[in-house]
Image (cartoon, rainbow, N blue to C red; front, side, top):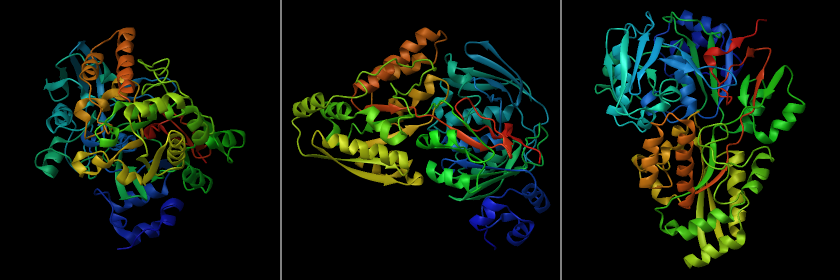
Length: 533
């Protein structure tokens, strides 16, 4: 079978390339799309975009990154979706109507006529029930996104009630419009998996405007129009997503014409703002991501809180940001950024730290000649962060060895399900994406997440109590105090040194598109519009 070269992919898939490689395009995932449909899509309007990482799951219950959710938003339907623009908000998608009946009951009515591709019938309330409940039933690592979900009651084919055990305020900003709110075909998933569990990267059926035409791991993912889609038609016939982890590499790919939409690095922002590439627009967007240095509290070398506090106080955050982000990023006070409920005005440890105080903590621990490892994902900014931390800790007599990982292996490091590598973790330079609700910025640090996403193995009964409480509170001021105390607890454990939320500048080609993003710059591909030639 003919293989597509990278040049074929980024420069344009010709009719000959399709005919040569057949409907499978060199062996990636393909769902029964007629060859004529595939050729037509490839010769139509094409959106070429960069993703920060490749997919490793397309199962909404078991997703691992926002990059996967960007794809899922194109191939499945949800009751609601994020509205593009500069203010956070949501709008109806598969739901014709949705209303809060009382604090624990939300009634929805589906639009009629949403079909699953590959002949699995119409999307109905039983598919909503199946999709939402399986996240809890199969003990998904992302079940926190559903909070206190109990079950979905079916009233008729198109109407149902989502029932919670306790009020769950974040449902509107997290569960419904993001990942776990994606609706799957119960029949197709049961056929594919037998027990309704994790189907990995092979969606059994599509219910969105696009389907997957091809996927070559670490090279590209191709989305083409879903011929069974009867809803509003998105602007582009095909979306090509190239996984490029490093921002500098993405900038080079953009300048070479391989992609037309990308995030850019903060240290390139000033250059691109003053002199953008031809026919390009640069926009600055606030980021919900949070970056921190974490410490594995279960590692013998880091069990003593005095050692952890010494490290906290030895780290000079503004110095790190000057080096890694050319001073374009602001200091974070926790996991929750400005503008989101629960943001702290300041951290417990001042941003600059204090070397004298750090040395006092180390003396209290009775430790000398300490050698530690720090793990990070491969990328210019990550490397700059860990190398700066390495230099800073050397000033209090701690030797740091750097371990760099590609993005594929990085995200499994702290997972107990993937073996024993978590036991070797010591210092960790990490970053998580977030959503416009403090629940999401704290969910990964409860005790249930130890061995999953809580790589510091931080355990606090009080934190877990507050986490449960915060999701039930409607009053913003009361709610804010809960999440502020939670971040205090994280920092007071000594296991966290918060760095920054970064920023999310984007760049796109105005001759190709009108871009559409969430307020934080994350792409909403369905709302992108092509520019007429």
